[in-house]
Image: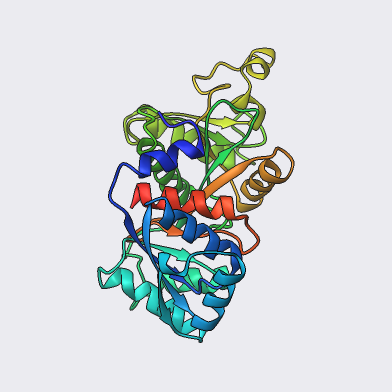
Length: 299
């Protein structure tokens, strides 16, 4: 069972380097992270974007230009289209966003004619967070793509998180369906959804996992809190996965973990034909590097 982000890197190194297609890879953090991943043997990258800018940023940040190939396309939207086309053509194994707005990146992935999303599939964001106060990785969904997931979407989000957990060597992940309270309340749709999904898991509709909800965050992460509140749950205090009811709750947890709890993270978009790395333009080099490692491991 992988318990740290560095262990993800080491596990990915056990496989041949994956072919990485980077869209608009012109910012310092992306170039540094891609160069580091190439240097450590995780990927063989191709950066599509403005060649002059890429070479200038690489030189300024002392990144060896020979570590990656460049496809020169100064127009960001055309560069994005070319990067996605590499996946469709079988020339790359997974995709990464560089210096381009996330909304354009998502649109390119879900484009019906030239994108990477098959009919009936849902695009969702999976985060893997490491915080010093927790003994293992926390897998979260969805904090960046789906604003208000309905019941069907939450089931898919959970399954994407479970797939990542299994790739990390967690044989039977414990998943908490996060709500504000533990009691089912017909006036709170999130509690109803959580109860239904928990029952689906009990009846084998969701496999190779222990799923419980509704659970408040303190119950999912603290056995002591569960004992004090008199809550009996096989997930209490030992959650591997947190599924959030809305993007607001997930995004606040995601950012609080990194900015207040010194957390580090890896993240990708699941549901497409390949892992698609979606990090913020402001994310650190480490976050982008760990995301590349996660993408390489799951591609």
